[in-house]
Image (cartoon, rainbow, N blue to C red; front, top):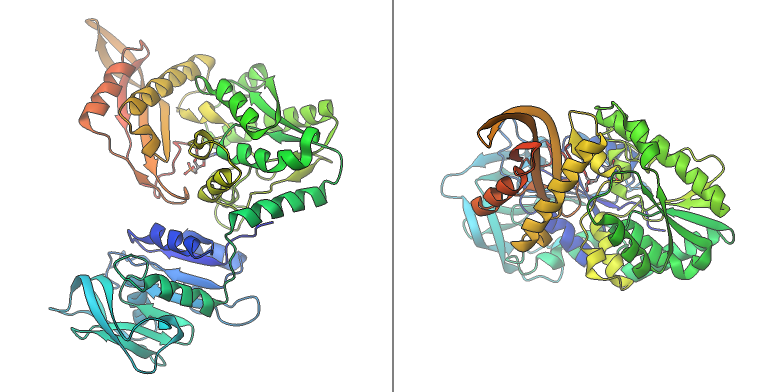
Length: 512
Ligand code: XMP
């Protein structure tokens, strides 16, 4: 079974962070992107072989410049060797500044775009198999003008900027090896991974085989039920395990009033695509009474979790199952605080008490984009691999500020379906990582048919992200926003529509 990645990328405000992650994955190595503000707890708990400090727009002299945790300077691998550390651009400047070198804005030495570098004769493994004079991509105002004690300078640009420095496995490069405009950048990153002792841990076909082997070994016989939402995680895990578990596996979907318009049909189709038998339990009564009067988001999650657990235990008993499978992802564990960080939100599928039932989470070390790649590998249709995520507690999390009554759920279900239709018609929906349409229980005044109305609002939010750890908010065109607002406010209970393009962090993807 896959374990958590051995490489961490600490995000310091670069536009290229996701590109670093993707390039490493293309090289067969998984990595996790950490926010500089909460990276320390991850570093303490999870063994690593390498850390990359991204670039960023700040100067080390800015009071609000992002600060990687000091631990990165002394982290050890499990074998007792120091980890490999690579600072890119701002990351290099931070290293130099922090370790006693000098960083300055040198007038005339700002480089934006292509630059030529000349490497020192002695060479360093980082530059193995690359020419001594080569083109790189630079984008910086400040430069390192003297390197810290013990570091050697590995090369300069034609204008005299220090292009790279190293002390053993601690490296800094002023340019960006992750962009294609640095033609030998991939070779350098390959060399860095070699220096770090990283093995290939991203090969979809071998991850699929190891999931099958691991589940078969832990569950040689007996029946198992699967919390099936029809999303990419549960459909992919079902498709991977259906050929192994066959009729011992039953997918169970709880219809608790949290589903979107048309979702039950889609869930049935995805179960058929994955080759699993599906049981849909009508649990609307149970969930509605559990959610009655609740506003607080953590309270909703906790109540959802309780009902979810009790219904699954019942479903397991009915099917004679001894185990429960879940499509929990690494991000669910991270955000639930299970990997050492702060509790951001308790995911309904993490840390469940299910008595004697064996709980299996075969993809809980993988990220969404990795599971999407596995979906393609097992031949699931694009409608599965490209399906946007939707949280387990579903529309319960999309009614904010007032209790999620059946009436409010109906309003948000209506709004969500109409917004999806409009975005699909404009060819925008498939480009979004996730659309979030929520009902805000803040009453505002409106005028409809010459009469005063006083009611709630709908918030429309869409994000673009690879791993849901960080996300960019999307701005829609005026034409699309007009069409959405006009369509939604035709509903008698909707007075206004608000658009929310806030980034994650500081916001999260969901409203709650
Ligand atoms: P946030 O809001 O944490 O969301 O940025 C990241 C991703 O996780 C989904 N999400 C959840 N999924 N139970 C789930 O199954 C939850 O409680 C939950 N909360 C957030 C969210 O939709 C997004 O895709």
